[in-house]
Image 1 (cartoon, rainbow over the protein chains, first blue to last red):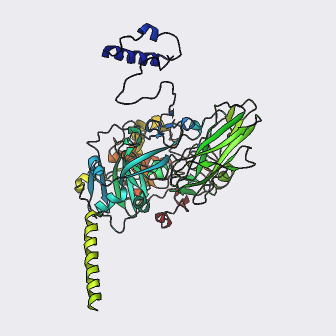
Image 2 (image 1 turned 180 degrees about the vertical axis):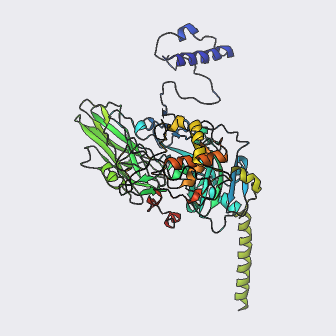
Image 3 (image 1 turned 60 degrees about the vertical axis):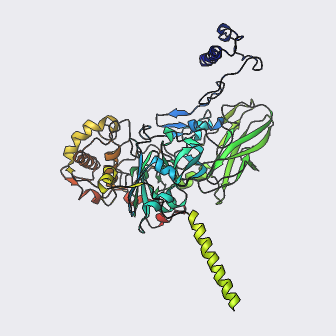
Length: 405
Length: 193
């Protein structure tokens, strides 16, 4: 039993005692014993209600911080499709700013009839929309993966939330966008004063200025009090701590869309504004470090596409020789993590399990070899690498990752 | 005939009534939420600089002046030579025609071999650098720093005075390599060159 658990149970029981409800409780001495087994929950009163719920102390589920600039979602420990807000991946360029929502404002200016500033409360007065979609960092690829790499280390920089906010089109109509407007600059209120150029077609299509995530206010790490949500687009364009939108007739060529988040190709050219996230899938279980037994298992994973709905996920249990269609958990939403599952009877022989996604546009998740042929080698700044991943199982049932690079 | 006229009149009356009723709940063109802001309030935040040079503030500086600013503010992260620090390499050119970033994972992207616009250097330093005190440099310091970094990349002479008139005219070596990613159904990208 952990110290934390001991302390929590001690506090709970102290509360019960002081409230005078239960006079017959065991003494604190018995509670703090070295016995690791919980008492029969039908024989002791449970703990009290609370203002804000906590996980069971038996659950160990955490983000994985790396280099103090990213932390990955533990995809291998999640079920369904929603990422709990406190486990949403992070990528910050100059830390998480401390922002008073009562002081925060959003400015819309540039090629508009009326430059306007909105308070957070102003934004909440507009008709709202809610949608569930993923946000994925376009650098969500691990070129240094080893057999002992978890799904979290491999591609933990994708998460899914139910977001609520005001359509950007509503705000742009309020300011009156002029006819020559084609782009807008989105700017954050952090120490990076992060900026990206957003095409007007995306702004008017499905962009949302969101203030809520999974039913409550955004987490500070996710842009509190407001962020830009561009469903299906690379994470960096979903500007957090949004404070300014400048409407213009051309892109601004900010550092993040020139020096970074661009893709050098083998022919010597550089792809710029590669913003749509290509379809991808990954098996989340069984994967490293799991050790499985002979017999029935359910292969589980998630698939997603920035182009729309996932059409199908195919799974191979023989290292890619044959593929079976996995079952998709409905409702299948556009630009959203989609859970897939396939029953699997492991015969005890070494093999590899793999998954590949096909989206509604017909795009098929490529192999790494196919990607490298078009895109070149993935470097330390490998953006938009979404290859088919394989997980091996040895004769003892030990799962390991098969590095592609 | 009379009957038909009556029917048409009745129908059009009903149509206009229903139109009127539906407009009561229709989405209006404007909600009149938010406050209008003055140009001076906008100017406090509107510091971005475009490739045309629009947005560049008054001020100027030379590479010679920038050497001291670099040494004081930048060298600790980017190295004395601009490519020998723990963080991003800023200085370095490639042979003409050489561009190894998709074949050599060790190749370092620098201002001189990768950044397509000189205006972006000014914009980025002004908004986000130095890392521990972003936005703390004066316009003159920023111009001189950009001049120094361009000089170190063999893109500007040491004594050229850099200002809002000539910064946007500097053509970066990798400029023509950049192209908008096709096949994403984004009309704005089709018209970029």
